[in-house]
Length: 314
Image 1 (spheres, helix red, strand yellow):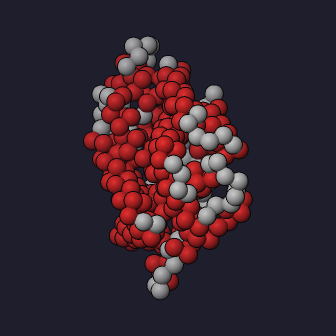
Image 2 (cartoon, rainbow, N blue to C red):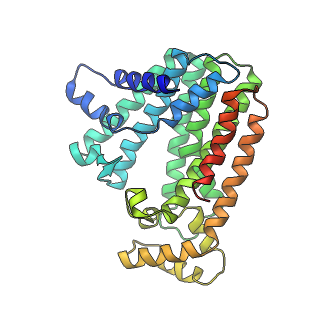
């Protein structure tokens, strides 16, 4: 996989290179900042299920199409959040301005769509539909900003759209370009969706439980932004000591003192464990999908990947 990762990095930079050096610099800003490239890894792994060969160029391209969609969404998210740093560097909006960030994000989405089209009509339609689902998920989250009555199903609908759908699509693209049987492609699609759900729930738990140093930002950032994730929702509705205090405290921007108190309440309440339990349900769903895949090293790696994610909060 190490060699394939190098191919992904080179292909991503090549995909955003233009005749305009200024646009190229902006579009490649977060690529150069690094990242785990989990979506390309997902596409590559899905393409290799049942095989022992290296990744095809089509799998590489399918993976970077998904990663460029992800990066484009980050450019837009940082504008909406007025974020100043991302991956240890200045955000595009902080360095070049909101207009440039929005247009560069649009450019990344356009390049992703172009790459998807080169892989065939099915992949192009799939990626376009996924971009729409990302928007739906983000809108669903925005609708409940500072909403202390945000329902649990609304939370799940949001993360299904804004996070899980792209992992699901990456896995499906990998299966399509590898010409897997349709039953295998469907199992990979379901696996990617389950992985994405575990990924986002774990990320939301870490926003509560991890230290500022580990996060690279203040813990409880989502609460400050008015985004009440599963651990917070479950704490507010638990009826335990501190739940009412938390509910009264939230609903508007928090002071530093309120943020610290809110973190204490959620960390000591049942919401974190409730979120862990919810994530475990998706781990089991991922394992069921893996049972439908051809046996082999790649399938074994996929089977363990969601459990590894969950172990980071246990």
